[in-house]
Amino acid sequence: MSMHKDTPGNASSLPPSDPFILAGKGYRSRLLVGSGKYANLDIAQAATEASGADIITVALRRIDLAGDEGTRLQEVIPPSRYTYLPNTAACYTAEEAVRTLRLARELGGWNLVKLEVIGDKQTLLPDVAETIRAAHILVAEGFEIMAYTTDDASAAAELEAAGCVAIMPLAAPIGSGLGITDPAAIRRIVEQSAVPVLVDAGIGTPSDATIAMELGCAGVLLNSAIAEARDPVAMAQAFKLAVEAGRRGFLAGRMPARGSASASSPTKGVLSA
Image (cartoon, rainbow, N blue to C red; front, side, top):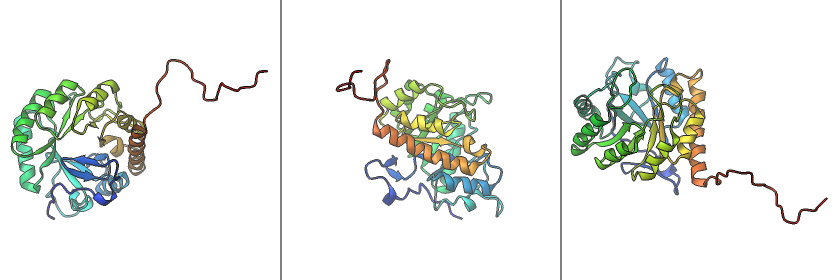
């Protein structure tokens, strides 16, 4: 099966007043999901469909896209229907990441890719300096980079200046399920960025995804929270609704936070006892 590059979402179903645009292409869903950690491909397929996601991350160093018939990811999550987002999971240097994405482009023609360079095997936190170095190389070669990074605003600004099409700060360490540990940091990145900001890593519950969207994020990427749930398909549905609810809430504009009570009933014209 051929690998189709950067398949866009169905533009006819985009909300006309709130399109989700990445690197000039429109997508229906603001939820991006991973393809790993599932017990089997049948569950992966069902959960992916239930999530409503258009974009699926694929760790090329961990998944054999050319495996035996019946064991290949592209048979159950076809690239003709979904946009594959190759990523550089398990890369620890800029050179490794660059080499991996060059191979990805040769294999599938992909230009839209997720860049992550890990600092160490224990924490799996990003190596910001190596990520920025790789970003400069890859952008110069025509890649459209979605960059996984820390929740540091200065690092996000450097990645945007390097030409990345999206910034992906972590909510918490990869696979931790701790949720958004520093909402103020995520908000700062959203407010300063001219490119989409998507929370990536550490999401544990649908409410975490809703919070990310309420902070103004353009989207959420997650894997473990669905794949490791007791019922991955039901959890995928829950995350779909959570992302939609959070986005609607953000656009609606929350009420002001107050330090004291404010009566919801009128005080004028109230009959005295």
